[in-house]
Amino acid sequence: MNKENFSYPLDEGWSTKDIIKVTDLYSAIAQANEKGIEQVKLIAAYKAFKTVVPMKFEEKQIDRAFMQASGYSIYQTLKLAYESKAKIIKINKF
Image (cartoon, rainbow, N blue to C red; front, side):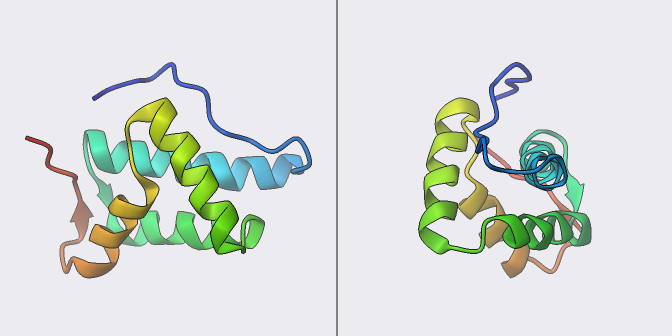
């Protein structure tokens, strides 16, 4: 599913730097689902995201909103990234 025009879930209280970190993760998740991304880049984007959204319940809310907007699961994509030994993470949807 390639949805380039979806809206990113963002918090009005985030600074510009925070928004960049969060949207970098969204982009990395989309890339992993569409064409593939290096595992280290995806995990680095997630670690930067966690500096903005450290609470698990907030992360779950954002994941649900992002999934609804894009069709991509942050949780499932990162689960694969952490479990995989592959250098390139590519979600294979059938």
